[in-house]
Image (tube, rainbow, N blue to C red; front, side, top):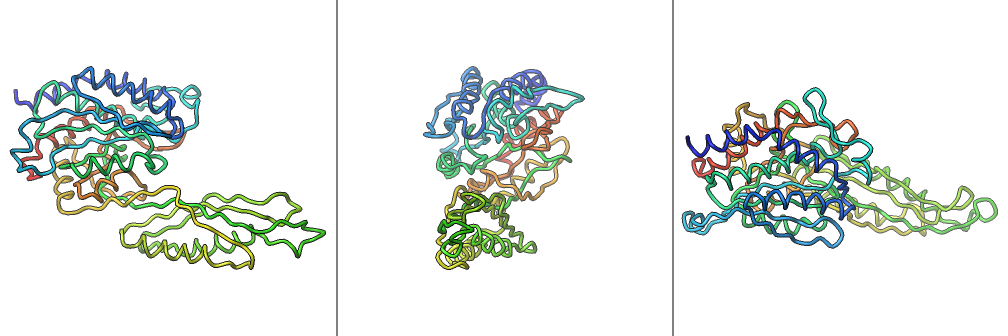
Length: 390
């Protein structure tokens, strides 16, 4: 039996243990701002990886979950490839978008071939898959280079602490597989939009809206002008969208509003479009339609676009050939950490995790039958990197 056959055969026996690990993860709180919960999921991952002979180290997060790095060394890789970047990175995030207590309100369950629960697809199933693929190589060997499982803790809010760790790992990466959920219909993501998440804080002047109206300066009035101007920057033909998704402000109904805030979601396709749109937003923020108002722009989080160079295209072709049911490459308007790795020059594909849907909602689901085939496809792709010239 070849090593490839041994690994795929072992993975074929692991659906039950995978589901057990997934149930424990899903039933553990882990919203992005719940550091203790995200780190509790990290403890589960650490215990599994160390139990299968992998070394695990942590980069502590001050506010969010620690970044865990599980490694399986490969002594001869660097010499064989002339000291080129060697590590094969399997990446995923542990945090979810859900409030504390959500796993108690709707715990993990399996019905009619689908698993449900907060974060079951996005992306705790991908974490479980990465764990078991690492364990398979630890058990049987066969990896063409050192393996790194990177488990971060703050992706859902733009990776404010995880980004630096991700970029550092990407600079040393031969390839990166990001195990976000596979798309319904067996899709793998080969391109993503970039995103910038920001707030505009507006200052006006309070005054009694009946007795002293003319002395007031309305921050909400200024907000209305800016919302319209920002939305007008949307260019669907170029894949540029601007959405003001949150607004707040004012003091009382009978007070001219002394303050207001709007929050913006910018999405774009081409890296060069970012500077153009941001300059336009900054001009809108700087211009006061209502004299006396002041405004400032605050960037709260950001993702880079996932773009495909020739090496990334070869990586997708390799992964496709390694799959029993060859997936289609799809483009996503959503953002992910894979954009950070691609920007560092690491050939990257995304959404190689088990297939799921309805992420970020109470109806989020995972196709249980996809757990093993997706793990096997990832393992085969790793073993065939040399033959693909990657």
